[in-house]
Image 1 (tube, rainbow, N blue to C red):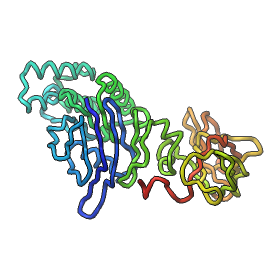
Image 2: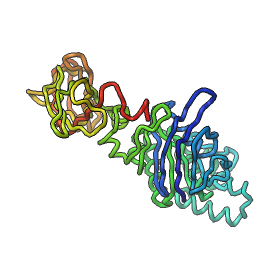
Image 3: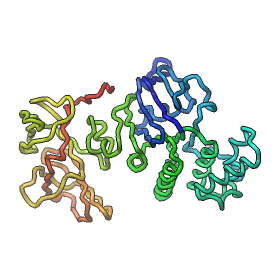
Image 4: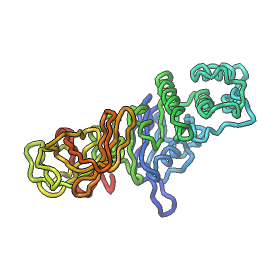
Length: 362
């Protein structure tokens, strides 16, 4: 297996800059997930690692070797696509062995490697079927098996589960996690699904507009997002944001207040928070709770979604500001019902108003 090192990687299409100077250090054996909104550059970045897109600037290393000008077939990578990319006229066995056949491997070598991949993916009973006889999850296993037999230094996954239904996505998430543990392989995975990112990744790379916003372990990004974008992107439902005033600083805390919120002390550890003046308060829906009286925030229910293990309530505060509350219980709320909310100030997040401290975004 191998490290993957991206140094000031850039990609432009004519005058349009898509990747704007990205630095990422992926260690041997890590499972790294690229996430971000549509158009952020995550798939383009993956294709540059794969050799399917030229690099406009910067240096890309795989296993200590600069591969900027190395053909995709010589980079020691294997890529699994969203569309499976398996041949309908071939059996599973033939599909899995296809890369070995092209490379001129002997029948004995092909049989041994296909059998090993089939054992790892628990698809020995499928080897003589054709793709038309397989479910979506089984077809994705075939695509992964074809990657395994090549013994790549790095596995690349481009939204491999997005064509599957919810139950199959869960099953395949588990299988990919097991595969990573059993192979100890370096894996780079692109998804728009943050559940996949949070459950699979050793390290998440959050991208926006061609820049890296934050890199870190899943729960680090959840508990300590460095800016408002990351805070709003990681976590479901999304973090609530309120406009507030900072009335002063007291050590590592800021005194925060607004027309909606009585003054309280919020922890400060991010850059860019003023000593006084406007700021943005972030509160995760899971950190809000209902109270019978004396709530910090008051409003009325506009919608409640009962999901069995939780209830998500859409609340309109008295000034019209909307926020979401996630309660870890099944409760009944009626539209128009008055509601009072509290939260633990230690779990509040304070951000600079109207700015992201990383860049335009660096």
